[in-house]
Length: 264
Image 1 (cartoon, rainbow, N blue to C red):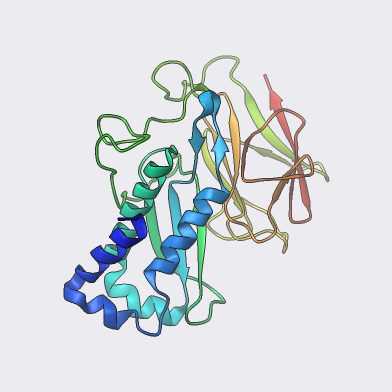
Image 2: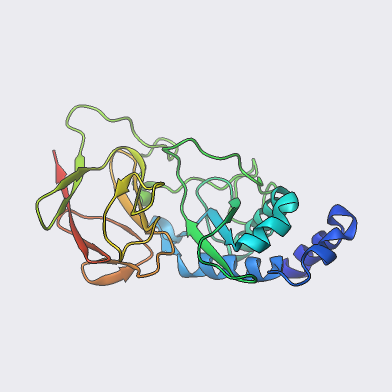
C-alpha cells in the first residue's frame, strides 16, 4: 500500500467519517500531500556523504472558506499530513533536520479550492512549534530512537555528534551587504528574509515574498534556503533551493542584491 493510500485510509476513519462531508467542495488533503511531496523533491540538497536533505517544515495556506470549514480538524489534519510526509521521505531514503512539522493557516489572495505550500528546512533558532509527528523507529534514514540524524559536517556542523559548535574567540562573523552599502549581520540560528512581518530581515521590495528565504548559521557555516518564494532565489545568477554560502557569493531576491561577507 502506497503512502497516499495509507493516508486516505487513515482519513476515512478520522472523526468517524466526517471528513467525507467536510471535504466535499473544498480542497482535498490528498492534493495537499501530493504538493508537499513535490516540494520535498524540488528542495532537495545534497550533503557530505551523499545524503539528501529535504524540508521538514511545511506551511499550508488555505483560502478563507476552506480554512473556516477545516478549522475544527486542522490539528488532526496536520498530524496526518506530517505522518504521511515523514513516511514518504523515509521511503525515498532522504534526511530531515528534526521532526516533520505541518502547520495549517489561512492564506491571502486564495480562492476556494486553492492552496499554497511553503517548505523549509527548520533548524531552530526561534521558539519552535510542537512537532506534529515523530517518525517511528528504524524508518529508513532515521536513527534507532526514531529521529533522523542531524546533518553532519557537510551542513556546517562540528564533529562532536553533529551539533553546532559554540561561538568562541575568532569566530566567523557573517553579514550581507546590499548594493547601496547597507549591512545586515547574520546571527547564529535561523533568520528569515522577506517583506512580511514574520521575517527577521525585512526588505521593502515588492519582488520579494513575505517569507522569501532563510539563513541558517551554526557558528561555522551559513546555509541559504528558498522558502518556496514566487520569484525564486538566485546565488551567483543560478537559481537555488538550498546552498551553503561562500564569501563573495551574490544573492539575488526580487530586485535586491546582497553580497555575502565573512569577517574573522
